[in-house]
Image 1 (spheres, rainbow, N blue to C red):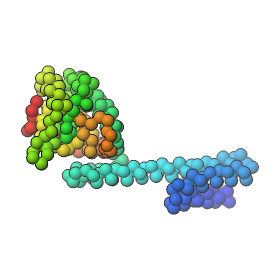
Image 2: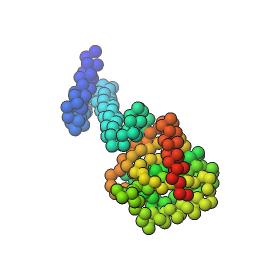
Image 3: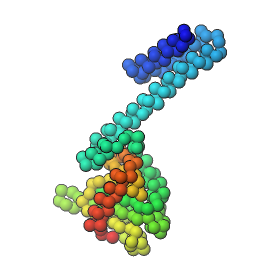
Length: 250
């Protein structure tokens, strides 16, 4: 029993270090490791004690990582528009993940590629930096396979104007040519929107700050939440689809 109490004491010191000074936990584990190797002579007891030390360390580290993830999720949720925040707040964090920076571009390509039913994208702007040959080829392959593609964009300034640059015009023209081949599968709308939303197959929905169709290098900090909730995804797909149908330009 004395051995068991001693292991409990060691684990307790590591837990206390975690609570009061997280940076010290590694030093505490290192101290107990050296202490064990220097003072214990039974290989079996050394093994048990090292297992307790580093088992406690990795359990605490895993828990801390989960807590940090939840904190990051909460911060990102708070930054969402009120209506989106209200809806996301009802969903468990176990069904969410975070995207940061260039992860957005890779995530979008991978999920559009895997889509089997529908892809819906809202972005403040469009640009040929994203809507390039690779992306257009991907959209064409999806449309050919029968996937429904919906795109909405059109952030407006205080005068009600969208900054339609040469770059965005080229992207629009490319979408127009592609939609001409698949008029029943590709729909594009321009209207006053600053939403950045991606919905795949009415299965997952992504809210955040990333302009999906104009940002590729992500030099500024951008964060989004991936929500694995069919009901919310289908609801957003329906809502955005109605807007795109109303303001459709292609």
